[in-house]
Length: 360
Ligand code: PMP
Image (cartoon, rainbow, N blue to C red; front, side, top):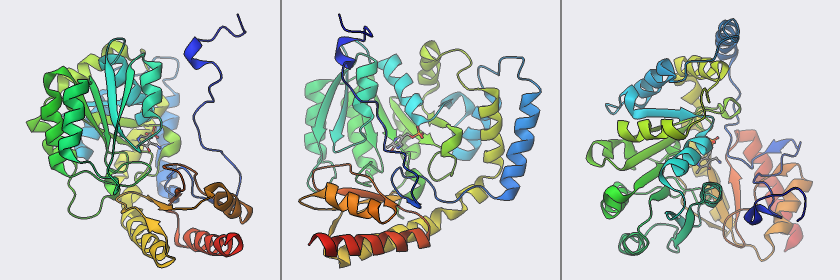
């Protein structure tokens, strides 16, 4: 027996995570580049100070005030009983797998997709099944439906917009898959990047009244510019939220987290105020990359996937040597860049042009 006596299937595995390197231009984990304003800092600090006075007690286990505020933010008639939250949407989705996956059950997504999904499956002893996206990274609905009917997954994970490709799904895709799955499973539309969608692609929130097996997952980490606070949430049928309560750890959302999220929600318009700017910067980045003769996936997110390079690592390294950190992720030959401020994107473009000239 080797030490430590780790579960067999975990031996030798690396923990998930992009390199956290201290470089001037960090465009690798799809963060919002704009830090909170002084007004937000002051309000959050006051809220945390108040919460601190109660830290001898456990927090509200049902986080009712926060659920109410999140329901208000989501609109679409979503009620507090339809909201659940945890420490980042990663935790929300792990809880979904703990409640709805498990031995003898499977979770399905369509590659290329978010690389944490198979980890939720592994950690909850759920079988992992992977279908495929088409060449344009969209879904062929007949093929996707056939995979569901064959595999009968308990959980379908559908990021929209997808990471790392940026592809948003049309509402028909959600409807087809919710109907194919039926009451045997749940369909999780992961809208971590939902606020960055281009005009014309609605949120799956609109479909909640039609499908009781639909879960829409969101996060405050991206558009809301609050990645450091760790707050993810979902909207779903109240019975689904209730079921998650069985697997959540008691008091999983600290009083400090709840206070920070509530204060941030009071400043929602301001925190979301840069979304339009980031969308514009994204569209400019896509056009610029295409002008360089590169392939770029259409993006509805705050990042874009571009390529292809015979040696993507050399390009990634060339950018890093010039102080710009992006991500080596997605299918072979592709790279992903998060959308930063205009000066950050100018630095990225210059570094990429230099690197491509040097590696040509
Ligand atoms: N879903 C997708 C598609 C993501 O890309 C990410 C973060 N990279 C998450 C969920 C999780 O984000 P968080 O835990 O910060 O909410």
